Image 1 (cartoon, rainbow over the protein chains, first blue to last red):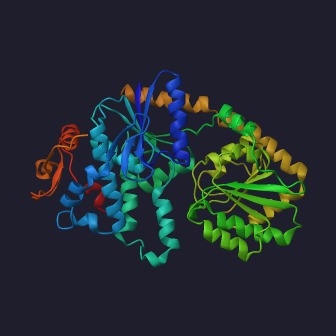
Image 2 (cartoon, each protein chain N blue to C red; image 1 turned 30 degrees about the horizontal axis):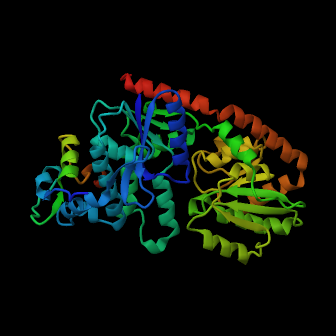
Image 3 (cartoon, rainbow over the protein chains, first blue to last red; image 1 turned 90 degrees about the vertical axis):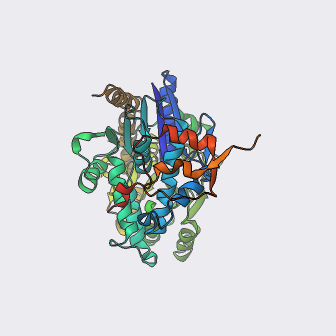
Length: 407
Length: 53
């Protein structure tokens, strides 16, 4: 089969969507299929099929689109600058995809709601489309608007209403919609009106061989000899809830002696704010900001406890990797996390934005080596069984075959 | 590399819901002709379905 994996987001990228796309590409090409990867370029200047070296500069398209969709001709588009930005960029994806030619593919598998809506509008009718939903853009943006009232965007604003509109139509664009958690499925049915029978749920997989290869390559970071390591690999963005973790560490510091250190691995727009929070809580000797690194498997092997205190997430790779490494996970109950971590069996689950409970969980694990190791061993066992990449690829191929045959 | 062959953008007015004339706006013929021939016949901009809420 010839397959197009398409996203509106940037490729390459450090996030999970890119990792997912490359995993599928590598596995399917090893099986004799041909897989192309379409997305925005990292500088936002073009759309490209990165593995073929094909690209369309947005400057070839934008002048005509912007002129013909000026305010007097398309007033709805100008109701808010955010709507204008996303829609114009999405139209450029549509026109670029058409230019690349979509009739050459047996399957189009989109990775977000923008790409799903866009490619559904320009693909030939006979080419089936699978719309994968990895998370909720509406959820993230609505949270962002709530947390930033100075933006003046509330539930009556066009920008507020735009995201559910594009999400519901994007998620419904495929012959089938795939997601990885029951939580996301329920959200699609309840909030976006996607018929339940059109949604397939199966979990992501993790390449065990690649993980252990990276883990055994080692790292130049050494754990402090007399302290346990709490690790949090995550983008430093609002949705990851790192501020909740830092608040919890402030509480933890008052609960017990300094027998721990926290490694925060990642970068993002909240870096300065989080660093300031760390200083304000006098945690500068207890928290290390490593920035973005490519040796996370090796860092996990040096760690004792994994934390993911996010506000919203679907099925993050970071939790899967921590389980491979045999770490107990302290996670929030956001999104699909409770489907990944069983409280008291493979980790400890706290309510979203609840630093006190998170601090108590960390204190429990730091104070009880036997319990911490038991949860870690359970996590490793469960992770090896549950996150099989072979199983994920097999399920995905079944879906491709099913929709390609018109079933 | 040779300069791209440019044509008036109005040639592609069919894809816009409101058709307007901008005789001074030139576009790359090779790119836009390829796009135009690949688009479904009922394709229009903007995406009014998404924008109607």
